[in-house]
Length: 401
Image 1 (cartoon, one colour):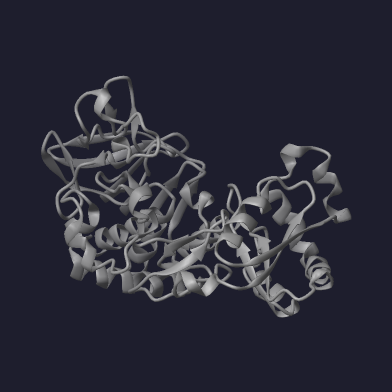
Image 2: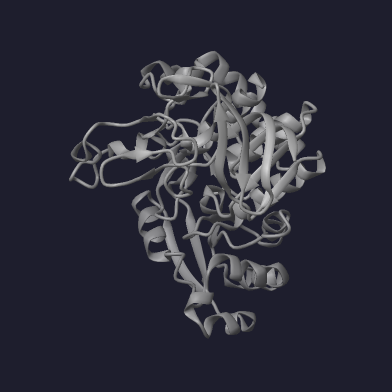
């Protein structure tokens, strides 16, 4: 099999690059081993946890992907990201050039850049104060902590009341606590959401807000909006423990859009090795297909969670190409014993040129690029930029190719 571009990794970065390249007429393939960070998404995308994300680029370490892109190009790619999703059939809330705030499962507010339609964006923290809130959970669902949520909101000046729905449709799942997970519940809710909306409507007293767990619309993205039309109060959908229903739906929608453009998505396959020579990648070997050749390759394998970055007792390394990795020397410098302090190992990742060509022993591959959280210098957790890095670096690489 031969392609123009071979993309290793089917998460947000891989799918974004694939969509952008297919739109430009490139013949691409994506190899996806399975679960990725989208399955853990809150339904919100973070650009940078700053009031002025573009002005803050100059403050970042030189290794951060945004610093390599530069503020002007970052602004351009940020604008393009929302349009790319819209063409894939996914409407996003929010200004691509600014931040709002989303409500977290702890009742706190966190900066967000763009969000799926069911995730509300507030202009500032004062927008939450003073509301009467009905928080509704499903009996037996432990991955949505109503007590944390209520406590956080009450600290912000809200009055909260918690209710629990008992639905006969959920009895089979409740027989085994391990079955009471968001995706299993969402499959039931595909057929039971009308009943839930009616039950919530009957529970309302004088509340002006209702909060529900994000377990609606796994297959049909319009379900949350239909619930909102039914309930005579503002309905907010708040994240739960993973897996993420809106994240999984987003991955499925992006995959469908990519395949509709002619892309080849190799689900459940895995790249085992690569043939390289003279600073070029010739081909890769996958578990199911065998040899796949391409003119260009994109490494979008993610970080530790998806094994795009791995470690032994002494080194952090990139397992497929043995690429150079940005890291501190000595295991003792990888982490801070104080759990709540910034942890160095979270910023480790592949070293590249400013144009995201992967380096090996200081020499760039001519046709291998990296995008997303496999890149070194991200510090995504601390800076709230994981999804933003995936989107803008994927678009940057696609444009270069």
